[in-house]
Image (cartoon, rainbow, N blue to C red; front, side, top):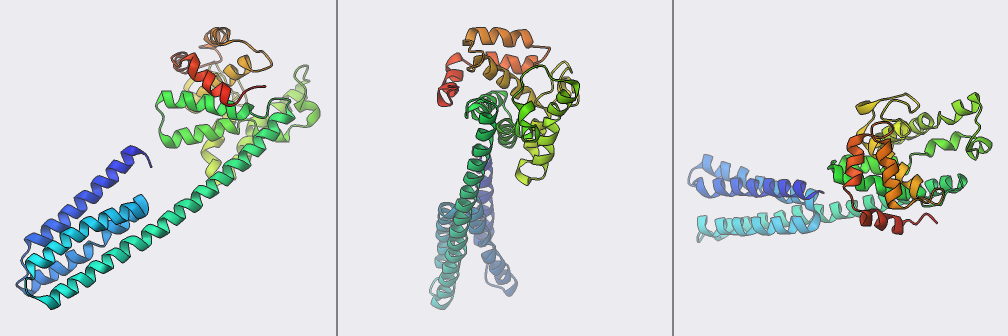
Length: 312
């Protein structure tokens, strides 16, 4: 959960508790109709603990139920002085608030832990897949991870949303997954393609796209896979997209990919020479806006990622 989303949800809970408490205290209890309204308001107190459990887990549910307990106990003591039977009823209701808050809190925390374990397993499976592809192509096993981190760094500086950043991250990691369909004899060949071989090789983005489209949590990432070989001037493939027809994430990825190619063990250029080459590609292969973001990131930040996933 993002900080902004968490603050919004906390504000909703505070507002809801305030409204319920305000009317609970302000409406008299002498007549039958008013007492019915009180009972309805009392039942509304069940909402905030459940909402807090869903949004913030056990800790959130405990905090919200504690606040409600203080408000509810104050009402029970002030509005029902000397009426011990009614106060006992109110205390019983209070115990129910805790059950309704804590049980979902425990269950939501358990569900969150299971989802995190599932996400970790999915991540490990994807890393094993891309590492095998990198090795098959005689790259280092960290190529795809390094390019992903480069792309994520660019995406963060571009100010994309968390949801979009996740899709861009997965798309960058799996950009070459379609090469599974390319025969070894062609996959390991770096030049001298016949027209038919070139056609087969250039089909790999669409192959990867169709593969990821079958997997629910990778469908957004599939767009990056489909367009990662497009070029800003329209000279790329498979569809010859141009400019903003290419998804923003793919345009960021192009910069990261070329930077990795230039500074990897094949070319081995230093940062300054690689940056100069990227500047020359601005407006042709690369989106000038993406290049500008790249240039505004310090060499030390690029080096940090490179050291985390070294090319040799």
